[in-house]
Picture 1: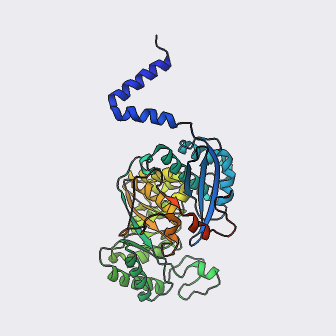
Picture 2: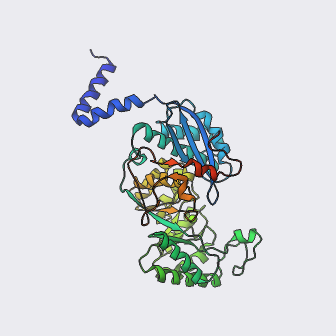
Picture 3: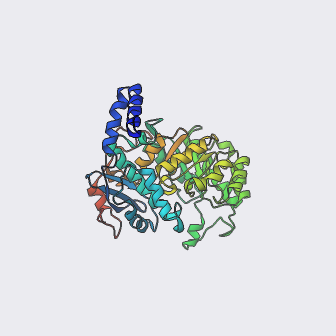
Length: 422
Ligand SMILES: [Mg+2]
């Protein structure tokens, strides 16, 4: 009688023989890697773009390392330091297991929400880079393969902070000069942040009731008419309202611009209430978009199941990492909701996001931020330009396929940071 081990061995052998020589080659290669590499350290370096961006480096006993980028806000570095012990001695190929292990260990402290999610997302990305390097394949292959090798990038312009349409047209021309083929404007230029920073506003009624005055609505429409004229009828032009407004005013404004063929209206109302957003999406003629302030499948669940947006927009550094982003997008695709990728990263996180965008069927566009900073694309060693004709072009190098430019990173270290010193 064959024992269980010899039975499994012969069954596996028969299966691989049936699948041909490629499987026969893959099996011993995978066997040779599993459990052979151990994590020895998790380190960070914070570099300045528009804000301090937190890069993560995972070192191993084999000398191979992985690079990732965590979310860019407060508390992230403390969380990464606190998570390191959970990773030491572990096999970096166990990416999803390690992400779940980190989240479960912090179950009583927020887990996959807030800064903890931002820290786990950065570590998870570095693990994918590491796994790809160990196995000799690009990260998008580990996520299921790619639907495309060119990732459409849209330019997040910010706003010129004036009601003068000419200034906004000039901003749109910068997008065209960069070569972007899609653009988003922040319409809420006279927002609460201005007033809270001590700058008086001129057109809003008051600070807290989320109202949009009809004066503002007219200004915004005039701006968008001018920008649409400059960009042409078919150029993808989105707008972001940053969760600032009340239901009735945001909807009224959307009706005022429904003839302008807008690509999407992002976060017209606050993102906490999926029912309200679902009602808005049903009544609004412009496609809606939300997701940058949601965490993991659990936060996205009501938004997807209630079909509360036409475009779902997770931020992989915030929402729990690359695999979690793919899960969210694939779940939304069951409702034929498309996926756009929120992105405020250095080229490290941007390339990581491009890999997950390549692996998602329903992908529409990846955001670009900080590109106007001279040193932004010099933070990694790469041929220029970083974007080509409005696209990021993926290659087939292992992992994320990038190397940091140490000299440029060191020159732009955030105050108090070292270059992966700890
Ligand atoms: Mg936004």
